[in-house]
Image 1 (cartoon, rainbow, N blue to C red):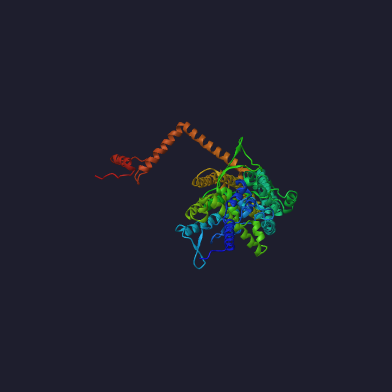
Image 2 (cartoon, helix red, strand yellow):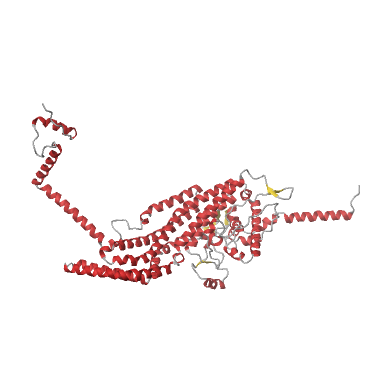
Length: 619
């Protein structure tokens, strides 16, 4: 047997050393975990970009594919997505930054290499895992679409200028056509009829009705002319009045993620650039109240349930206290005492499979930019999967899809929560939109109705129109405040330490209670009570009540006088006796005529037995 030469032994030793070093480099080592631990849990949750840069790239797993990140407007929920703040930074909340991207549930299970070099599914997954995961994905797609519809309706309802901007030209053209073709022609005829009516009433010396009719005609003429002359301004004034409820209730919408930011809703791009020119790190919250509400609902209902499906847990964190205040570390960040994997790695894991609005806008520049963005996010996803596998094996089992049926339960919870939350929220938004629509159609319909309403006896349609418009304004104000309060209550319920089933039940019950309490305001035809606002305005409700009271008092006085006179009582008794005899007398006998003696008993017995007359027997 030939022994290797010294040079061969040295060469073999060097090969073994190089292989060992390569294994240390390619295998996730303790050094990687140590690098990851340099970031605190708070920094991983809020500043995960810098933390991921310090984590080394993991070794390529055999046939384990990271998910492809999705666009903000992808899927069924993308029908309702709108680009949010792409020109003013990355956004702050889940919706304003990512839209509805990233809520898919990938299967990161390890796969085996077949003989032919193709990847095949591993047998380590339980039976039916693919079916369960597909069902969970369908539940999350439906839930995201429901929340997307709710957010879209809310943003349309809370921003009337954006929704109804197209109607300005419509109102101007329609009002001008109706005023010139209908009111100016037929209104003159109606004014002539009013003049004839006043002349006729003047011959009867009825000055009260004559003055009321003239004042009514002047009021209608001035109102119709003003609205037809400035239809857009009239609708704008009505919008400002109806938006009072939104302005009063927007203070309830607060986002903890925007703490420390300057709130500048509706700021222009130039003003935003001027603010951050001197201080690029300045946080400027440019979201409107509707976008803040969308961030709140998307984060509470969809994102938290997505964490439960992906990692088997929701966010849990507790902070260290110092004299009742949250303690801070050396860098001035809140000191986390205890947290779980969902809190620590959840935001980074979600961002690794979702493209933000800014990412999507940059990816539109060239296919190469999109490919590089996708590759970077997939590498981040593999890094996070390696860290989760090292720190929390149970969460990693959920991440790989090993507990797919539990994902189905989380998807069902998300679906129920989204449905119960959206029932009242969408209803309130529809009623708000309906109120703004009624005002705009009333502006066009006023010249037509006012043509007839100049004649005061024919003013019923005008009064109903006023009742509908005023009721619509009140509906908008009331349901705008109710929608914000309901959103605030749902946010507190979902953030409370309650079982998931109880949170879902409470959200549904709060919506039902709000609907029952606000039920009277759903009537757009008139207010509750005896009359509408026009009757109250012109004093007709009070007149009706006074006339009714006078009539009731007159009837009571008549009854008292009748009971006080003896002759009235005798006449009343005689009247009752005659009515009784008329009922018991035979058909051929007149009332008051005496009944023969031989038939008295039969008549009496017949009457007492049921009021039926029995004819006498003949001997």
